[in-house]
Image (cartoon, rainbow, N blue to C red):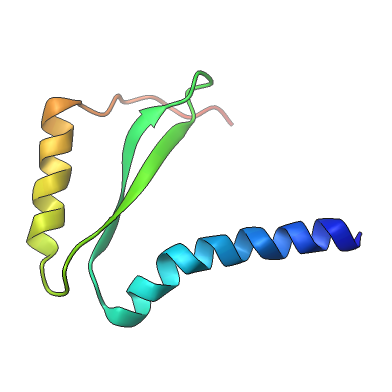
Length: 77
């Protein structure tokens, strides 16, 4: 039980360290789908822009979608 609780805590801290900082600083951030696994599960990447520069992230997302359109695949339940 202790090991599973420890793993749960570590997973939560890893998520917080990648998102909480940007929530605090007010920097724009976006998670974009990059590809899919063999099981068709989405794989994403988080991009962070300079404070007040949301347009750069919107432009990045548009360019990524232009060169590699995101497939309309329903993730299995």
